Amino acid sequence: MADEYVPSIAGTSFEGLKKTNVHGAEYWPARDLQSLLGYGQWRRFEDAIQRAVP
Image 1 (cartoon, rainbow, N blue to C red):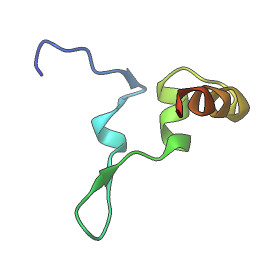
Image 2 (cartoon, rainbow, N blue to C red):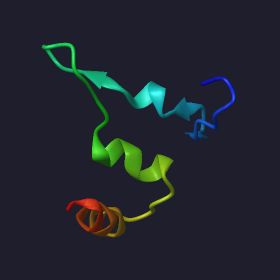
Image 3 (cartoon, rainbow, N blue to C red):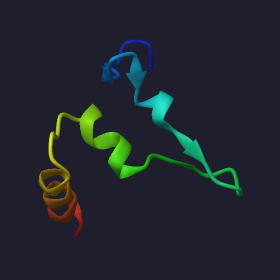
Image 4 (tube, rainbow, N blue to C red):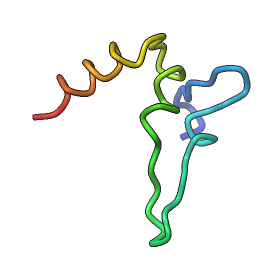
């Protein structure tokens, strides 16, 4: 993983946004990922998510 690029904005990295539920499963809230991935508006990010769903 050391050679891979991990995006970050204002000191917040992908791993820094990670949450863990009561069962120990990791997840990343979409609203948190929105700005990290460069989407300025939720509706644009939501459109991208919908296109990615099979």
